[in-house]
Length: 152
Length: 116
Image (cartoon, rainbow over all chains, first blue to last red; front, side, top):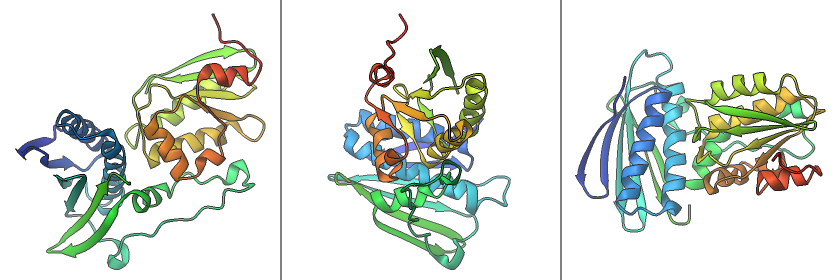
């Protein structure tokens, strides 16, 4: 069982270590969003925040740690006025080409059922909802940061 | 992943009783869906009223479910939460799936009254 270790430093500031597997990510997001809601974070921020965090974290689980049996994702979430600033760190493999994947474009008009895309939605959602999206590889770590605000 | 199913005429009505269709639940969703629609021949209506969270993996599973039905049967979605609605619109999957505001409306569009 993986229980996310959540320590609250100050109201609206959360630092979590999450074991890199889908169940731990799911449990950590439920708890984080419940805590943020209790602290008064509006749904207009929580909905895009949970979605972008899920996409970035699941990408780390599936790709950065694809060759590891275990790994951890460090997540920092800070409420800054009307927006939320997030920083994620992991020790998995670097992003190919040391940059974040671009948004995929799908042509869905008159598409046959068997040709419907089943993946590739993640980065489209991230690019649509996150502001100031940045990635760097430093000291053997992937560092991804972004901001969610009320316009997300 | 808890999905309950009911047959109304030729329609298979599937109610998702879980709060999340996410990366942790996507495979279970697809497997369960496949089992539940096997014996039907008409459209399936997926009642998402209880689903508060859908991520890209969950959306992928819903698309996979659509493919399991094949060209002859449609997958219709009903009662989307604001978060699920947002994902459908951002990915433009709202152009692929018929979306109904409620199960009652979905059934009424087929001229069927909800089971008593």
